[in-house]
Every structure is written in structure tokens, then in C-alpha cells.
Amino acid sequence: MIELHVTFANAVDAARMARAALKACANIVDGVRSLYWWQGAIEEEDETLAIFKTSEAKADALEALIAEHHPYDTPAIIRHTAVTANQDYARWVEKETA
Image (spheres, rainbow, N blue to C red):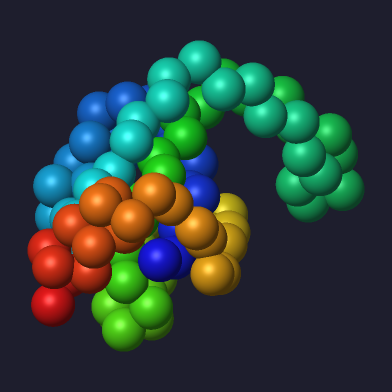
């Protein structure tokens, strides 16, 4: 199983992307505080984190879709490979992304 962690400006954008890109499951975590360098300055923003869970076979396509349609110029799309989960959940992800 693969997870992609992606930040968005708000929950509406995160949910819109989750519905468009859904390959198995997405969790949306509102109220994330992000600090980062952008164009030579430190920025601080409230953001929403979306955690997409998918199979290894679908991860590249999911990442490409998110990158293409994300409203940020440089979206943070963080891939966590070989994520483990309980067997029933892992089987469900594989089934839903087949």
C-alpha cells in the first residue's frame, strides 16, 4: 500500500481532489499549520492535509493526477512507500484499486 500526503489551502479543495482522484480512500485533516520557505521568505499558513491510500500499481497515476490538477504552483505531494496496515484493510485497498 502507498500513501500520498498532500496539503491544500482548504478542506473544500482537498475534498474536491479526493473525489476526483479517489482510488481507494482519502482522509482529510483540517487545521494543519504549515511553515515553509517560499520565494525567499518564511510563510505560515493554515492548510488542510489529505492522505490518499492506494496500491503500488495506481500510485504513479494518482500522483500525476494530483500534480496536474492541484491549485498550488508547487504542491507538496509526499509519497510514503510500502506502508503497512492490517491484513483486512490492505486487502480492501488492493481490491478497490484493482
